[in-house]
Length: 439
Image (cartoon, rainbow, N blue to C red; front, side, top):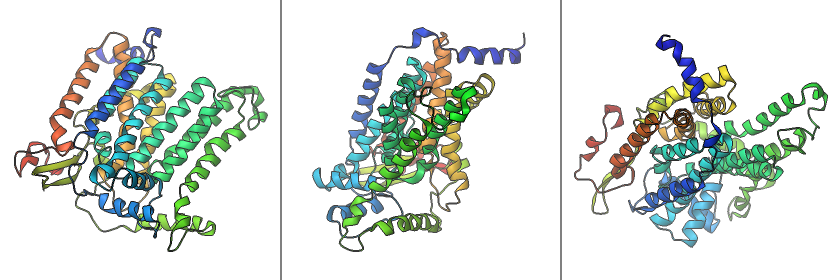
């Protein structure tokens, strides 16, 4: 048997899950979550000055506190509302600015792991996914800056967790919560919009194939899966109408502005105005990039780099140099499993990655940045975890151990430049910018 002829068999083995892997890794999930939180909170208030897009969102949050007038109208309000609450009750300080992202990043990491568990019922996939996501750099850095993205990403993670629970347990309650969290994600930022329709489409797909000879009852049948007792029409309410309702509800504070308060008639107009503003930013930026550069991790962003708080410090928004690339062949393996074996989970992860990325490839927004890859990178880590877990369950464990060791080792090595640590010299960026385009 040639090496090439063994490849399909190896893939088949990798994606066969023995029953003995199906023990809920809740203790591991909690440990990873708490470890992540401890690292995120360390030096959270450093740098003590605004960095990158904090200069836009902090003034907007202050306007929400005093309800004077809208600022930064090109984005929805929810993430700025969280910022405003923290600044009011914790303090208008660097720690108060960044605490919402720190907490939501931690909650989102936990929710993402729970979503993986209920989707896969694989202990090894869940633990590996948590470790890879926690050390992929992107999730960590976005959890330490007062921007909108972690609110959006964490709400999607919560929505997917509740969605996987709904499918696994046949629960209407979890289906409703899925819709609520998806609406909240849209209320934070529009980046995840292409993913929001997928739970509803999956429900319709499952219902269609479950009915078989009774497809005339496609819209109204309630006695079959994926969730017995819930018709497709009802699912459309929870996964379509409810998210939109929750999204519009996040604009509530704007109705109380002292200047130009929002009205019901103006709510839809504001959406059009937001879209116009999104497309109006055309001035080139030093760190702007395109989707294909994100995939190969060649155009990061310096969120901060200067002498501040008594030392030279920097914050580099970049993906883990190893796992960002190692995840790409894992995506291909998952695509193979989805197409050739009908593996819904692996195929679904590929679809989610594609949908999170294609949004930026085709939307025409002139100025884009590497952090827009954040959602796609989550599914990239999921694909890598699923492939490694398949081998792990069949006692081929060295690839998973090697990947986790390299991912964690690079995270430790880059930690000073991810978390604004004190650097040795003004040109210390050279120690971390291995590629010219990283500078």
